[in-house]
Image 1 (cartoon, helix red, strand yellow):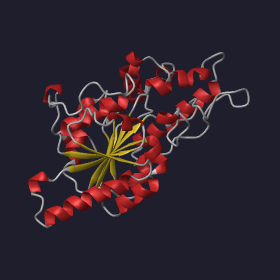
Image 2 (cartoon, one colour):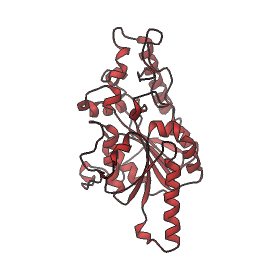
Image 3 (cartoon, one colour):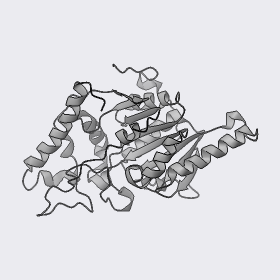
Image 4 (spheres, rainbow, N blue to C red):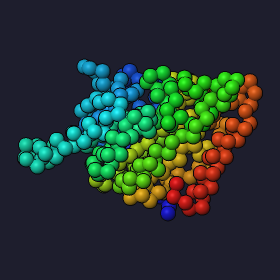
Length: 314
């Protein structure tokens, strides 16, 4: 099935209104913040953000906030439960006539990969099963970034983190494969899922706009290039985000009622183009090139896109 833009076909169609303003205390070059800024242009300001403890917690440090929307802070494992409380309260107030229908708001969970893939997975599963009407935006920087860049279930094979260091006995770094949270969500049969990258802004805007047509749980996995944790100059955030998609390591796709469509088919540039920009993978190239590890990563990417070419739902 071919994917096509229905709403956002030109960069000039992206709303100019800003809902995430400058001056945040987040790290310079944060790719997750860039994705949130673009998403907010579609979501607007009639929103309650339910924040799971993580990097984005720094967005709202009382009494300052760069957002023109409401904010609720929760523990790392309970943001979906918090979203349930907000959504239920709104529905009850509207049903009783104590809140006008036009004052209803969108409920959006903000969670990092540590919360999304790990800490809050039980709470999230319950919320999806109950068909909670909410957006879940995951800024995926592939580590527990807010507490020192430790290994998370989203950390890819070969990455160096504070708890998966490269050493003589473990020269590769992380030896796990990244958890496929997209498929875990899809197994719950929610109405809408998507992956996004800020380097493909029309794709991102289109997906958030499409999702508004569906009532129920909606997941957005946002690629969050992290200069602090991935060890690269913030000036290269756009290059890292673009190459992750072009080399095939971050597929852009959506799933509507479980049916997956890839929204961009990359030319599959060599993974080395992406990996070499980041200090967390430097040990794969220095002092000697770890050919087996690089071949493993490349083979994993190739296997994924081979399944896509064969028409499998991945």
